[in-house]
Length: 500
Image 1 (tube, rainbow, N blue to C red):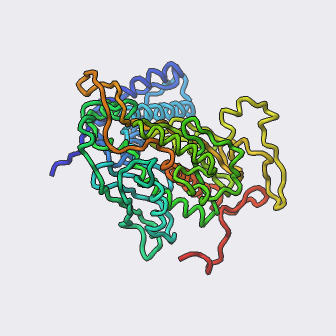
Image 2 (cartoon, rainbow, N blue to C red):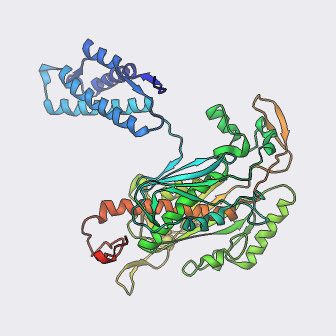
């Protein structure tokens, strides 16, 4: 049976990359190195073709690097050095530079854009499914073995996320009952991929008939067509918030690992709906409890402001309109040392994760933009040694992270969500065939997304932290730690205490 994978001629672009780089190299080191591609090498390169492994991007990376290193060895055999200024070390350096730059050019030319449905490095989560398909779910790869886990552990957060839970959410009725198909045996994770599935049971595809041609303003309808040339009309497909079921289910697993093995708690709550803003000093992050957040349908821990927020959502709901808001998330007892310098800073990873949620439009961390109004002496968090001998800060304007690395203080962040795009008011738009028209969107949609976004934010934060926890253990805590400066991520267990 013939392979369905498409192939691209690899050699032609490789030759052009070598030619351009050879020219660059000569300008950098005249007389040192001259690279000649013999007809034999040319023939080899032209015969080389590379399958487009859309389903497995890592295969492409491995093959690319293999090809580049092959070019290095072949190039050494084909090198003509200038006898007047032969310098083996310099020539080796320039060949290494050549191969590195050529590798980058080749990778850029042949880079495969993944679908963007997988998150994480050590604790990897892939979500799948669409709003009006047969169901949605996730596959969790990299979960440690022997973690006590059941469907009930996930169902708690799925119930907090599910539609139809109150009058201020979408009236779509889904139980969102999850089923674990693999990766768990007799109540314990096995270390193999965990497959979680949630069926869709209340689809109404006819509600989207007008939207099959007309684009919803500020929705992903238009950009999906621009990118793919096709889109799933019913429910918005992958752009629907129903995709977040897989995130919440996997986030529940991550939260359980963090809680059981490092005592980490993640709590999010609604701090703003439209123009109703909850003052920060009304919430004590040291003592905040989940029961306070879940005491009302808007998930605001202050009862008085919760009623104001509910009234604001009700007012726009009856008019067929929508409003946005802000979700605040805190992390207590986060292990110190999570995150890395420069590109993989912890706050950068958190920002990427939460900003990947639907309808997000802003992210603030620690003092955020308000910190720009302070001087350095006002903003700096001064250190002290607490009664347990640990280094602490007297204030927390850094938000629990300094230099991209967690310092053990409470991590706090705020995420802005825009008003729901799909509304029941007349709006001007265009159709797929580029005609101007008007649209009144039908269907069942949230007048405000933030009450249901609370468990979504918690899930994404948990996925970041468990991934960083595993990375920190592997890099810095796998071997004996410097107890004068570091602290073990988890208590050292005796053999009889290890969970099995």
